Length: 143
Image 1: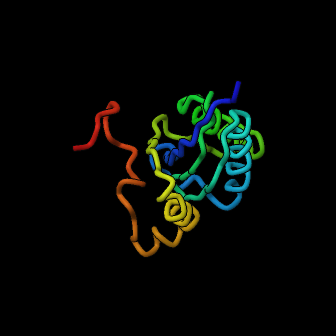
Image 2: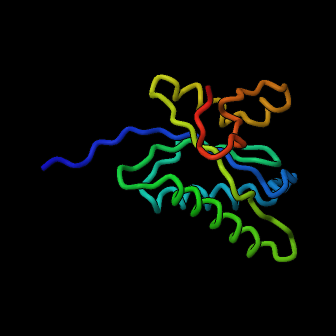
């Protein structure tokens, strides 16, 4: 019997606690490394990761057995724990919520560029609202 076939791409975004500028150069490497390993532990593939001081974007290919909420929880809790362990006395925490948007294969290159160039997009205020939104309430579809 053939294996499962799954080509589902998810763009994730979540904020730091209270939108504080906590994702500084001294912790970015730790955060990204643990986010990558959290994805791999769930058999997902990170296609792009990027962010600015107060939020992070991650584009993943979801594995057929992975649950989005579990993948995100492990990425967030693992990176927060690793940062707080590596830098005791320094406050770091993610906000509880996150956004997850499916991405078509035809849009992958564009979304990868968007995620990888977050600092530039924010500096030039060239933001794509559909890729920055994480504040829509209770899984309600946008009209």
